[in-house]
Image (cartoon, rainbow, N blue to C red; front, side, top):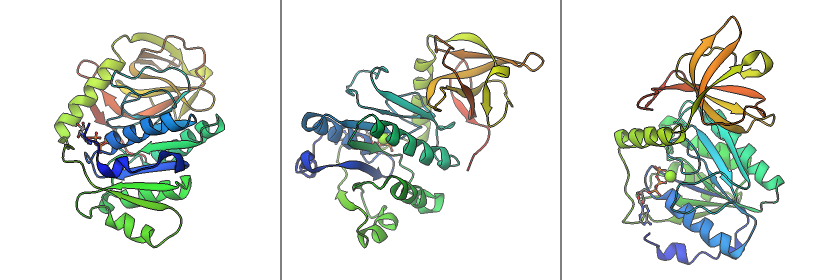
Amino acid sequence: MDILPEWESIDPTRLRGTLLVVGASGVGKSTFARYLYGRLQKSADRVAYLDGDPGQGRLGPPATMTITSERIGEEPFQDQGAVWRTFVGSSSPAGHMLPVVVGSARLVRAAQEAGIEVVVYDTTGLIDPNRGGTYLKLAKINLLRPSILFAIQRDGELDPLLSPLLGSRRLEVVKMPVSPSAKNRDLPSRRASRAEQFAQYFADAEAKILSWADMAVFPSPEFRLNLLVAMEDSDGYVLGLGIVQQITETSREVTLLTPLSSLEKIDSIQLGDVVLDPRTFFDQPVRARG
Ligand SMILES: Nc1ncnc2c1ncn2[C@@H]1O[C@H](COP(=O)(O)OP(=O)(O)OP(=O)(O)O)[C@@H](O)[C@H]1O
Ligand SMILES: [Mg+2]
């Protein structure tokens, strides 16, 4: 990892509250956020990392967001200790901004209720004002009230967001340059690595029959073949994901391919907005949700 002098000059002992890391795709947000989290873990013990990217997250399968206070190393992350996860239903925040914003607030609150004082929030690269990126980031800022916004930019692309914020005292803006080692990946390679992440997640999955007569289905039980769904606990956090394999309307049963071993704690099923090809694990959108 290329550690910039601007990173080294950060004093982690004065960081409090939520630290939002923003920037366009591939500028090094996640690399910086992980570095910052590592430094914070050495200086404070009540720190959490929010992986807010449903497309290329490291801490959970695509279409979800995860917060944890566990160590994040190079090896694949295994759920252990305190981990909360919400379902976005799609790998893209575009068309799914409400579950992204609501999910981020719920994850930060869950961590704070468990005693976390500092949250490093690694966001998605959706910053384009013409695609709602500016409003998405402003909504997060107004809801989460971060103390610092770490803004990683090449060439003024964050100015539509930063210009008004720099005139406001509601948070501190810290501008960061882009590391020369940062590489943006194109859409086909992002799609392929997402399929790889789904494939890993479902590697040990088995077919399980669930009766939806006994549980809530959000928004309504309109199951379809290969739809990605989340099984959630009574607080609405993700227990596991599933892929719809068979639907029996008469007995109100659905067969899901899922790695979730116990179906005991399931309170509800949340329908996603993508179908997954069960052989290739490539995702295909079926609808948007605002
Ligand atoms: N400081 C750095 N030193 C070495 N490699 C880096 C650095 N910053 C970024 N990279 C590399 O560039 C690529 C993109 O970095 P990273 O995933 O951190 O960006 P991102 O902004 O989080 O991207 P995305 O928008 O896809 O989430 C990765 O392969 C990463 O290893
Ligand atoms: Mg990232």
